[in-house]
Length: 205
Image (tube, rainbow, N blue to C red; front, side, top):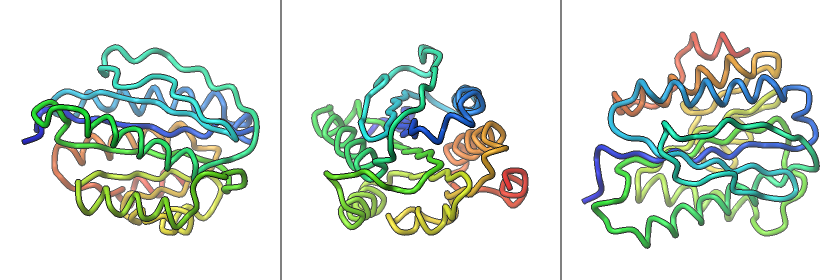
C-alpha cells in the first residue's frame, strides 16, 4: 500500500521566449502556488521541470520546506509534448523503483504554458494523451493544466486532461491564477474534489 500521508507534485513550467512578458509574475506565482500547499494535510515533495525546445529538471523530490527560490530565464520555442511525456515517464520510473510503502499516495502534475506546441520531436499528442489517460485511470494521478492567453480547454482536452482541472487565464493575471491553482490543489488533497471554482475562473479571466 502506498503512503497516504505523502504526496508528490511535479510542476512542468514553460520557459519559452514568450514567457518574458510574465517572467516576474510567474516567479511570484510559483512561490504562491507552493506556499498554498502548506494548507494541505500530510507531507509534500516537489519536482520542478522547465522547458523550451530543451528540457531541464530544476530539482526533484524536494520536501516542500526545502524548495529553493526559482528564477525564470525565458528563451527558445515550445516543446510542450516532449516536456509532459518526459516528466510522466521520469516520475513513473522513479516510483516503479520505490518500495510501495514509500510511494506517495497522491501524485499531481501541474502544467503551465502560455504558448502552443511547436517544437516537440520525441512525443506526439496521441502518445502523451495515452500516458496521461493511463496514469489517471490506473494510478489515480491528477493533472492540472494552466494555459495563458489561449484556448486552454482545447489544448488540455487534446491530451486527456479534464476540464475541471484546466484553467484558461489572462497573462495579466498570471500570479493570481497560479495562486488560485495552489489553493485548488491543496483543497483537492484535503477533500478529494479537484476542480476550479467559478470564482477562481472569474478571477483569472
